[in-house]
Image (cartoon, rainbow, N blue to C red; front, side, top):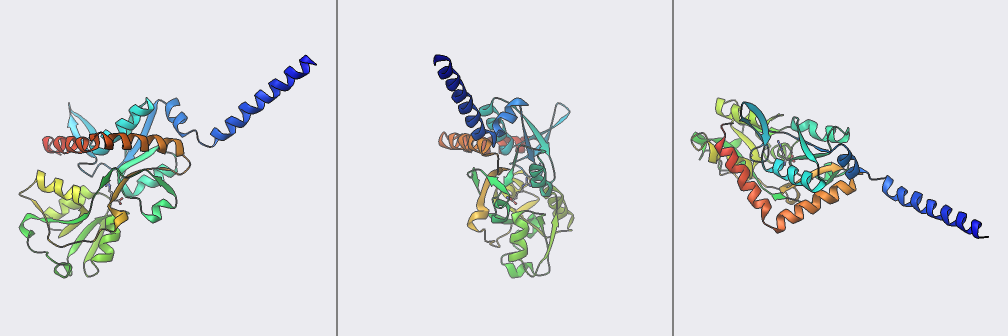
Length: 271
Ligand code: ARG
């Protein structure tokens, strides 16, 4: 009798373990990252102060606000961070194909993206602007002033949508790198580039003799003002950790400090 009871007890215990395991089985996202001791983060380093390359001791390094955030998430998970630099349009495919664990690239959670991707809570808010040559600082005051002009916007970005919708009479050109377009702006190939305010501010601060923000007002739909971390829909535990880090950094005022820190690095290094 006693033996039977013991058998029953161990069967029940085993069942409990199996059932508990089932609950977790769906989401091993944090475990996986901890097992490989590395959080792999995809970014597109053409976006100072969010992510940009610098040369340090003869070696190219990707740094910036998003990288500082990635490091904080890595710290929370107890792992190191590996940054994978990819052109912006390829970031979400890489995430979906499990090439990276998270995408931290100044990314906006659009309704379209939300269909297949999960987003963290916002860690930054921004609007959209038109970056122009300094010489043209007062040339483009209304959307009508941009008629027939070539305006760049990053391919697959919210800026592409904004430019195509709002600048109907301009020639909207999309390219994969923001840095390529800002060079073309200087070459005269483009007359303006639609970029988020944090980015245009950064260009103007770093190169006041070259760039200016046009007076023309672009509308930024509410959702398009948010910047969030992107993850896979199934990786709920990893997103929960990410949100925990963001909440903590926000509450303690560290997020703002990290942004300033990234801008300081950007101004300091010639890239
Ligand atoms: N926030 C915009 C978007 O989600 C642009 C982000 C561009 N990021 C970059 N690293 N180039 O589409």
